[in-house]
Length: 116
Figure 1 (tube, rainbow, N blue to C red):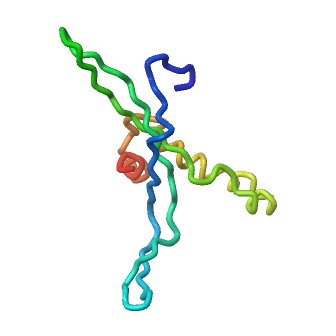
Figure 2 (cartoon, one colour):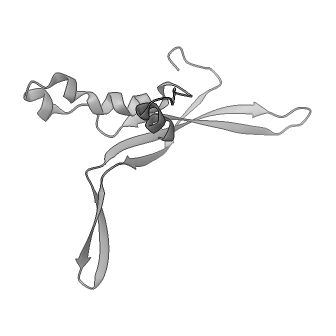
Figure 3 (cartoon, rainbow, N blue to C red):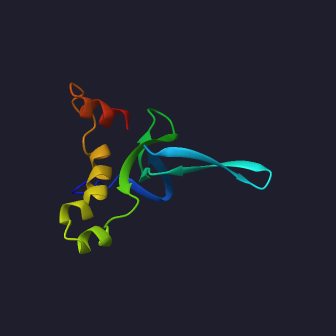
């Protein structure tokens, strides 16, 4: 993805917000019970399509791959508190998810990354 692929189509219209970690808290809104998800890591999944032509046919299918992007690129509050590494931590953690196709899962961190 660094040098680009002329056959790969970035689908900015196909994005999903994915949430990791956090807690679910229930509350009442009048007579309706609702839930709120707090303290989660938000990641945006964006689709990339590569057309795959069929053999001896006019049909073409798409191979869809995903790229993870952070919900927030830069945390100005942490930056102003001189926590420069913390200001970009969310971006780095989101990009780790799709930076390697099959991460080594011999450690707990590798297993967690593979599940994401």
